[in-house]
Length: 134
Image 1: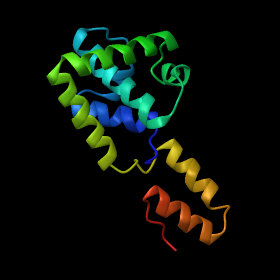
Image 2: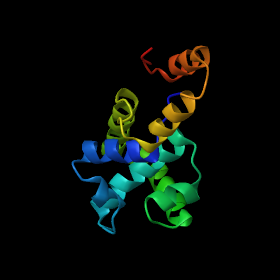
Image 3: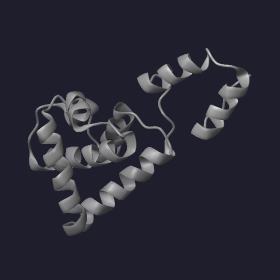
């Protein structure tokens, strides 16, 4: 399973939707931004394994708001072909893009890997699909 961070998914979402991450995490409650945010929350829950409270903290929202956004996304996946196509494109984008070099999760993994033996580093790198320089 590919490792994703909330910031990586938010960036992919913003890029796909043509908005900024700040706007995605901001106070805009318009229907269009709500739908974009729902897609991001839906994928965040599935691709990061984070809890609703953790996702809510990232988006500066209550965990119950994240639960509702996730449920709304699931509903839209079954009822709205345009939304379903957007989520499919977004999931593909998240899977195909490497984590940004300055991604906090990526930096933490690299820092921990530097403390390990070279054999373990290579094994983890292969598992994560990451090329490690010798």
